[in-house]
Length: 176
Image (tube, rainbow, N blue to C red; front, side):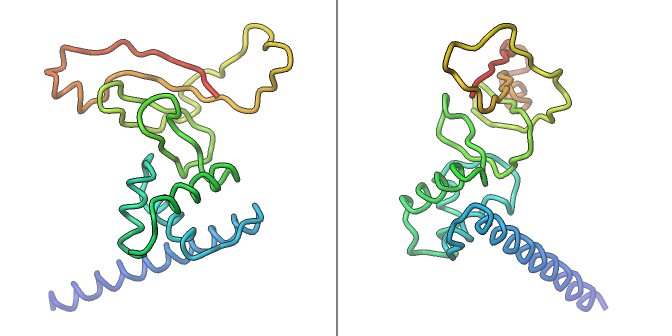
């Protein structure tokens, strides 16, 4: 009886995984059509690696993941495709000013919490901050396209490893 239960559970997991991949595949193809991009197999695998798990990954981390399915893929191909996805607004560019370049598959409006010690990045719901308002005019000729709010401080894991007594002051920074 327990063997049958395990088989059913693994079937359910496999069915869920296949269903998730089918949804991701359909979403990917739709986004490529919408942004006039060829939906290549390499691009699909790169996109799947990003959306299959939450987080903010560097090109090297994506490369390590994709290489398991496509051993012949190069790191340069991963970089090139991630840049293409960011330019097409299929991905979000994260942390261009500190630490390694990372991308975010969550393109919905949100902010980030950044640990100043380990450089981990966590999403912060946009509703948790009051709307940011400019208190004057932008320099002549500057056209604002978007803004990001980053809250910098020490994450729970780093605070715990330091004995909890060494908390950095959180700084909010508005960048583009």
